Image (tube, rainbow, N blue to C red; front, side, top):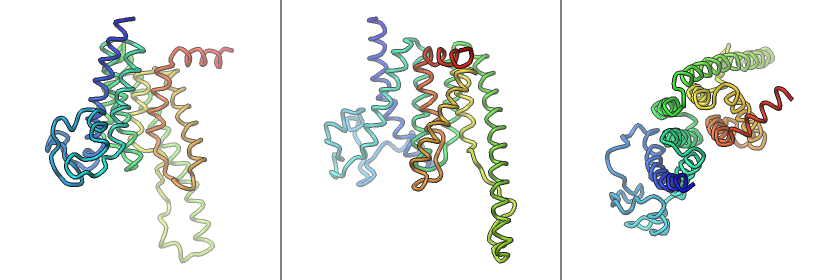
Length: 274
């Protein structure tokens, strides 16, 4: 028990530090900027931050959420991301105190960054996406089995993407043809047949990561849970945000199923065999 608590405390500190780096990824990677240079600076006044301005969580608290140079407010997102990193590492390592858990926690941290980027930009950088996938494969107990499951889920999700995209495009084509038939002058304004992407390409590596980490049964359950969460949120926010990113739901479902693996396994056994 003492060993578990000791590793968990270390994981909390490491996770908070990783969370600080995640803030850099979230801000710079979508803009095509280097994550290494130049050093961090205030986005308002441009002054370069000192090392003691970048202490995870502590700096934001001591500075009272304001820049040390110009006094402008620092977004609450920064300490929240650092807190998220600490929580991810702490929970994952406490569940399974081992070296592999640090690798898996890093993978979950990258997915958290992807989720925030997806929410803001409706797109995900492949560099972070693929890195998270390989971390989950590397942290799995049986790497070859994890790789096999990753390829299976990637292929299955790709097929699902093509099938759903075809269905949605076909439905949209019928709708457009009906409108053009009623008003022929609209023909020049619509592309027929339309090409509608129902699922993004960035979701495929995340689906592969789910297969690598959770295996087939639990992985399928995670995908099902992600779809349920997305449908629920979509119903609530359909009018406000019709383009709902899927990666936040995939990442959250993956984390829930991984943490509660025994309960999920028991639930699956009950649903399948009664």
